[in-house]
Length: 234
Image (cartoon, rainbow, N blue to C red; front, side, top):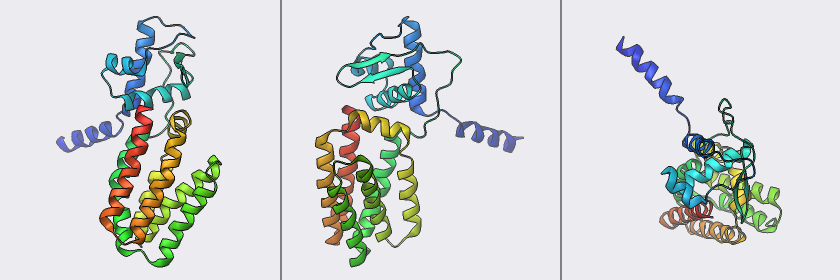
């Protein structure tokens, strides 16, 4: 009996809603409780985060998820507006892990992957990382090509470890950059971040090419922390 209950509890726990969905429900509840109508502007992110007792990062993920579901509209430089009244029976569309969940995992895992690559990378593996950096610089203004080169850069570092499982993990994390991630990036990525990303990638490459694991770990962590700060603070 106890064994059965434990299994049931495990199954229930595995279906707990993601944090951004919980926060999105709170925002929808606020819209309904305050009788807000379509076209009305929500409080500022700072005020909303305080009112709902959530972090700015979680709030931002929730607002983007609600935008994808058509409940609100995020207008850069203006604010967030109700675009349709929330339906109490409607379920928020599943859009995958939150971007900040993915970034947190990447900071932990890819920093160590970069350190391993710095220890064992061959000259040909380093050349592949350099190739991805050059492609990203070449296609800086082209979103699709730049995104592809960015992906190749991180996967080239994983391949440089010589561990196919590492490649699989990094590829999995990259593939979690779904609709929520791309909408967040569309709204909040700045030209300053785009330029700094190129510098970050050069720093990571230099540390790996110098076979300096500590520097590679530090450079990768600094890069992903910079992305997190930009997307959470705007």
